[in-house]
Amino acid sequence: MTVAVFDRLAALAEPIRVRLLRVLLHEELAVGEVARVLQASQPTASRHLKQLEGWLLRRKVGTATFYRLEPDQLPDEARALWAVVMAGVEAEAEDPASVWAEDLRRLGGVVAARSADSAELFRRLGSRWDDVRAELFGTGFVAATLAALLPPGQRVADLGCGTGALLPVLAPAAAVAYGVDREAAMLEVAAARTADLANVELRVGLLDALPLDTGAIDIALCQLVLHHVRELGPVFAEVARVLGRDGRLVVVDMVEHEREEYRDTMGHQHLGFSEGTLRSLAESAGLRLWSYRPLPADPAAQGPSLFVGVFGR
Image 1 (cartoon, rainbow, N blue to C red):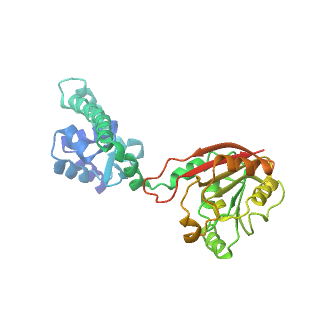
Image 2: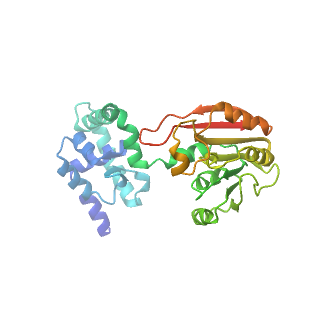
Image 3: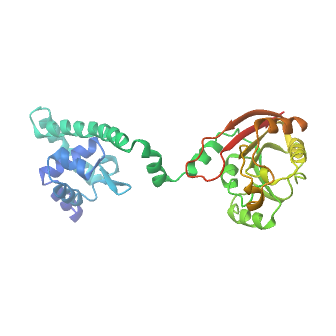
């Protein structure tokens, strides 16, 4: 026999460690949960878990560590030793009064308490849940999730793309993603941001003279751009030209407002857009306004509310 075998025998010499392993064979547990099942202190549970290194698999979740026993992943001699020990244990465990049977009853209670703990957590957090989730995971996954709903093979164009913030979100779900902007400096930033995305193409151009072929686009996006453009008729005409037969234009911009100072301080050419204005612009270009929906106001935003409009033929 090897020294490793003696070590494994020593690990199983304490009945509490055999109980611990048997519990973790049935369920993955954190240290505190192990302590509750065995009715031991948490330091005692931690000490025995440490002495069982080589027997257990560990999984980190945030600051917590979960343990489990997977006999199939043990070395041959450990698996054989465990089988011998368990043959004796399970015979005793048939007695409902045995400590082995009691361990599994307490294990069931600990696992059931998880659901109660989760429910209590949600009750406590209430309206703060969105903030807590954002702290843990950020918010970038929301846009990526929505982009994944795009039908496969779509040719997408972000018109007035600026620094290309939307392109890394759109490109993984698109056949090709074009970024069009009139400012070369903006496109330099976009190029760095999308350098590892082979299906992104950046082009310098104006919205009323798009550097795109006729019918080349399935979905065109125009986000917070139109209020900077003085003459919008030619823009809608160009978008109608580059859209395919079943193409769509999605516009996000400000609803109509009265903040005149934006003309001087921010160079805005339009103080937002009404549904009627957008419908007229679309119809003059052979498009239809399919939907116009004001978006919920962001409490942290200082500007006017926004809308999303969808246009097609």
